[in-house]
Image 1: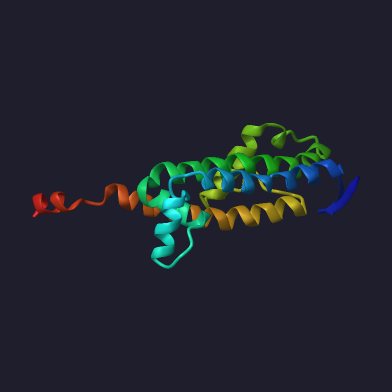
Image 2: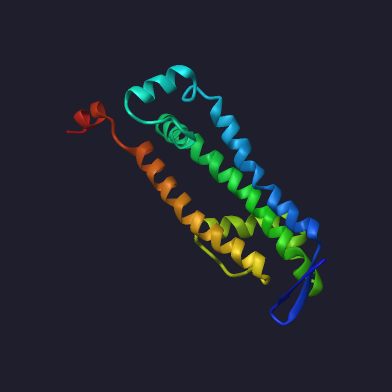
Length: 171
């Protein structure tokens, strides 16, 4: 058991809950492995990148995917963030809310609601974390949400940007 003192009450966690959250770090390795088997990481691409004086890394692959198909790339990032962070928040907040006979985080949908509202930097305040691990996770989620919203703005700009022939037709 892990006991944390949160807002005047002790919250009891199982060690397995913290280990489950740590298991989500494996998602990084899964995503990295998937990106290693794209057309941007094959031997020809490595040779081409070395000829231009840089190494093709996973970051280069993400940048390339963003340049070619930004809508789906940002959608995948947003969806993965939503699923992972909603589950982590639910793990950290469910024991504390159950102590108060409140079933907010018993529903996975409520965790998704909280995650979307935090990611989009709206923050209604109807649901908020009460535990220290939940608050730390929410801080990380808020910063990541600011980055993700900036990416969405860039993608929307690219979608609605006029092409050269459209600019000529407009003038």
